Image (cartoon, rainbow, N blue to C red; front, side, top):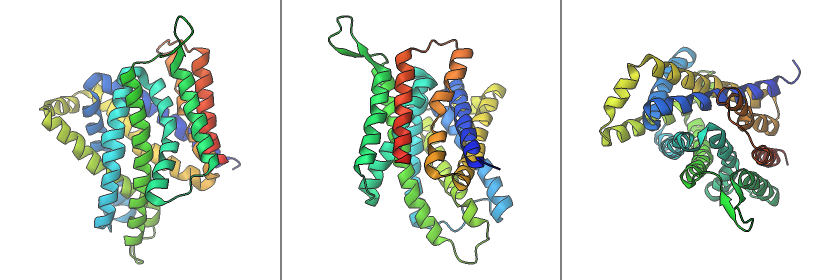
Length: 312
């Protein structure tokens, strides 16, 4: 089938859009920390079942100490910090702008790869970063009434949370890459054939275990474990959490792995980064939000920056 990878990539973008939409709803219903704790708990259960039926072990078998160390660091940066920022960003400025800030994840990943892995950071990557950040600036800045100074169109808190979310995802991705390299080296030659395919899922399970535990610990420190228990007993909350988990670690991760298998990685990554565009539809049709031209222009410039980053 022609363009199978590209079609799957668009499916991933749709999946991330559904995840962002219901994450916002769930966070407003039970709070961002409870939402993260709940979805990561469900993710661990799902991934355990998936690993059990594919490699015969309902846990990240063969993972050594270095694997756990780096993937745990990835979870703390990507989940505990990054997703905490993202879900609170949704509460502050909504999923539309929250997803816009996620376009800075690739530049942050490039910077982290340069610092941690010694990866090359050429002028093309720097250009792509500049274009992406320019797009975000167009969306969130405007002239004051006198026309002499720039002002923020969004709350500073939401902007900082959005930046934190993009940084967390980008840096967390690089830390995951390091952890998966150690994981791959630790897998013995006589391991089940499916282990190579399931390695990203086993790695995700480690991250979900650490991240979920971190959010539960936060709830305990805030003396809000009752909020978690209440959410578990709430049918609507559990429905939202199940949708977030299904379209996130289940369908989203699976389809993203398939996308880069059947399509050029740069094209696939760019198409998967279209979530900020796709989320405009429910924002307009359901939430009746009015989208200004400069926001559309800024979004287009940011997506162009992402495309340049992967395709140059």
